[in-house]
Image (cartoon, rainbow, N blue to C red; front, top):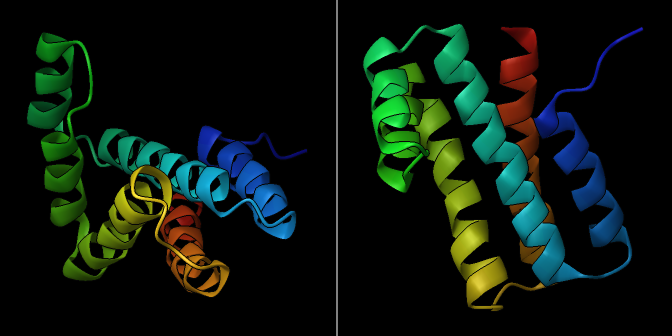
Length: 118
C-alpha cells in the first residue's frame, strides 16, 4: 500500500476541481501540490541552509521555494515557475482559461512525479 504525500492529495483535489470546471480553485490546488513537492524535495536533497531559513522565519517564503527549485535543476525550476504562474494568474488574478490550466497542470504533475521518483 502506497501512502499518499501532501502533493498527491492536493493533485487529486485539483484534478477533481478541474473536471468540475472550477479553474480558480483548481489553480490554487495545483499550486499547493507543487509547493509541497518543492518542500519535500528540499528535505530529501538535504538543503540544510534553506531548511534552516524556514526554521528561523517559521515559514516557507516564495523566495525560499524559488531557491530550492533552482538547486534541483534548470528544468525543475522552469516547471516550478509554471506552478507560480497558476498561483498568480489562475487564483489571484482569475485570468486563466480551462485550456491554459490543463497545459500548466501537466507541469505540476511533472514536479510531483519527480519528487515521487526521488
